[in-house]
Every structure is written in structure tokens, then in C-alpha cells.
Length: 212
Picture (tube, rainbow, N blue to C red):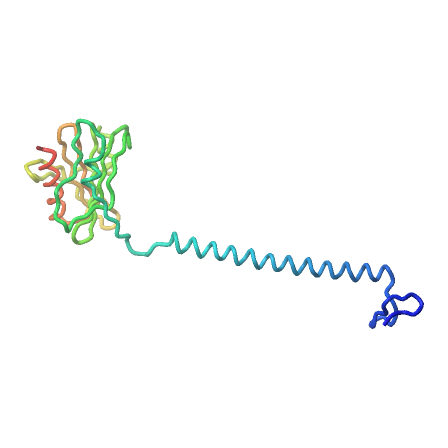
């Protein structure tokens, strides 16, 4: 319906044609409503995108609560390491033993070159091997958290100094028991949570390899 005098549409709510101001206000209100709707729509899209990124990262990064089954061929790593004139301790062990770490670092601590292997025993306990090349007393003491020796024992024809902290329980961490021996320019520290049998097996393998 139009106004016969102006030819402009009659607004039902007003019963008359809109004024120019009313037309501008109506259109401006419609524009604001569209902008608000678009903003809300964009916000929902952004939230959905963010949620998708979070889900992706969780799927890629998340790991199970248990220990990751990661096996390293420590003997191959030792063979490929470029360390002239030095034999890196990589003892022959039964297949029931495995390693989850093997690496060599120049001047790793206290200016000492260090070969490291992390062994997992058949009963899933840990023995860490640290071989310091031309190691100094400070480096050795730091590997043992400055604790004093508790005795010595012979394994594989080699004298090993013993650091037994098992009585401390969980406070000893991964250094509940440690063995230290020197082979020429190499000082080997074995430390971990394994039982005597596993320590003897690894220590004997190290002594056989480095004594030769």
C-alpha cells in the first residue's frame, strides 16, 4: 500500500509513510543486527577451529600414562660414534635386556666427554651407564650426588667401588645402587634401581669389553 500523495509505501505499524529519518534508523538497525549476527557467527567458527586444533594436538602429542616402549640399538650407536682411540662401553647382554637411550656428548659436564646408555633389565628396572673419558673427580662425584662409597666388590676381574643407597627407599631415585670402575682413561658409573644380578651382568660385560 502506498500513500496517494507521496507515492511512498505506507508502513503498517505507523499507518503512514516513513520519514527519511525513520527510514535511516530502520536501515541502520538492520545493519547493526546483521553485523552482530555476523560477529557471533564468526566467533562460533573461530571456536570450532580452535577446538579442532586442540583435538589435533592432543591426538598427535598425547602419550599413554605408562612408559613408552622405545628400544635403541646402543651397540650400533657406539660403533657409529666418531671417538678416535676410545672404546665406548656397549657390552654384550642377553636379549632380555634392552636400551632406551644411547648418546655421546663432547664436554657434557665438567668438561668431560660422556657416553651414556640407559639399560632396561628383564624385570623392567633401570641401570644407567655413564662413561666419562678422562673424567675428573668432580665429574665422578656429581654422577653420584656427592655420596660416599659404601664398599667395593670384584666383578669380571675388575674392582668396582659400591655406592649402596637402597636403604633410603624412594629418596635415592635412580641412584639406589651404583658401581664405579676405572679402565685406563675411562671411568664407568653404573647407577640404577636393578637388583644385584642385573648389575653384575652389565658390569661383567663392561669389564670384559674395556679390559680387553
